[in-house]
Image (tube, rainbow, N blue to C red):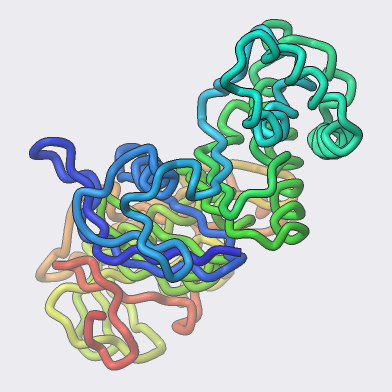
Length: 389
């Protein structure tokens, strides 16, 4: 197994800085997910690990060895690209087995005349055939082994590309959005397959995605990037429950966390539309954002609870219902915090069907233990000592 260490890694293309002094450690056997919006530097970092792109500054360590100048072959990685990169003239079975064939083909690669026959002979060896069939079975490709890429759907091609990488026994598995071209049902199945494969081989996986569901369900550690800078490193549970800043809080979670600008006077909170008493400690900061996840809010039959809102969106999802609500103007605080309607809309996720319709008034309550406070000026989370982290 191989650990990874990023020591102030920087990557520039001309004057553009794509990754800016990134530092992180990835233990042996970790399933690391690089998560962030498009253009944040995820795929560039993956290519740095693979040796497909040079490091501009900083140190990249594989295990305890400096790998900045290592070639691709020395790094021993398997790479699954976002694009399929399949050989169009080869059948599925030949595409999958190709890495195994090439590992055994090196003694003859300089003799063109025997190239074709040598590759064919190696591909028919029992150990190569067995391994190829095992991976094909895991990814549901057994019935497609005799077909060529041109006759496959996009999802099938992606699975072949994934199988070709997984058939080897590398030190690192690098996956660049490998499920992006699959339908929803197959994507769910493949998430489970890759997770089980990681547990079985016990190797280090580095997985790039902008899909938070993939990150939360597959990762043991997540690095969230934005504009080439690390926003937070942690387990999925830590990142969801204790986001480091408002970017992380909004990016992880669907619908995103509710962030309500408020002014605090001891335990009395004032938003742009309402005033209520918060039943818990309130940080001392000039500008505050009250953050709470939609599933942590609950409906109340009493108008004496904290927030009064008008229902604007109702999405019935079977086992649960998502409500989009706008805070009603019940009072006019002397110093309005913000008048933007988007900042006064909150989402509530509740089980079953609340029998509410668009235009209805509802009353929303919450527990102070479920609130995350943020500094309104800098966006950082405020810890228990009432200081931004």
